[in-house]
Structure formats: structure tokens, C-alpha cells
Image 1: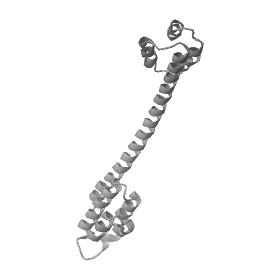
Image 2: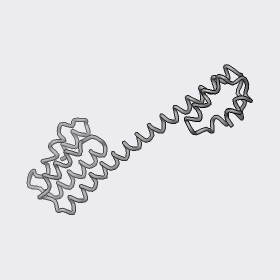
Image 3: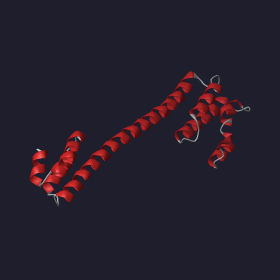
Image 4: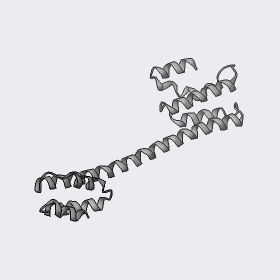
Length: 161
């Protein structure tokens, strides 16, 4: 086990496969060794250094060595890794969607400001504040269509209302 850990710590992952059969080796306390190996494999999975499939294979090889309570405990840890990975993936996707929506709204607002500044002049703070508080993309798009036709800020304010 020490040699395998050392190799993995140095970046040599070719020894990982040996972990599957390690609990069956030698004249040692197989139960204790199986628990150590599985605990180490859980750590490797959490660190994304090893596939859960190898851990599952070690669980299968240790089936006759470990009692069902220990196997269930380790299996729950494996499932938690899956749950955390799933939650992370969902969080990333949700964050991406929110980021895209925020980026689109910011882009539309910046376009409105650019059009108003180039056609009418410096934007009054109260108008900028009102535009910045608009949350609906459709409302912003309507204002973007109106902005180039406005002859003054009063006209744009009426459109805002």
C-alpha cells in the first residue's frame, strides 16, 4: 500500500489498478487492509485522481472480506461523491445561464446608453438609474428600438414610463 501511495503521489497512476486486488494479498488482516484501501480510494475519487469505477471494483473484490455495514458506509461515501459532482455540475450550468442572461441585459443597456449619448448627448443620472433598474429583457429591447428615434430625453422618459 505504501509503494502504491508513493507512486500515486509522484503522479504515476499506473499503480491505481493494483488497489483493486490489494485487500486479497498476503497474510495480513484482510478486513483492515480492505478498509484502508477503500478509504484511500474514496480520497482519490474526491480529488478526481481516480474513477469511481475502480472503487466499485475494489468494493466487489472486498465483498467477502468486509461486513455489510462497512460496505454500506463506504458505498454511501461513494454516492456522496456522485451527489457532489452532480450538484457542482448543476451549479455551473445554472451560473452559466444566469451569467448569459445578465450579460445580454448589460449589453442591451449599454447599447441604449450608447445610442442616446450619440444622438442626444450626456445621459442624465435619473434616466440612467431608471434604465439600470429594468429587469425584463423585453422591456429593454423595446427601449433599444425607441432610443434612436428620440429627439430629446423628455421623449425617452415618456417611453420609459
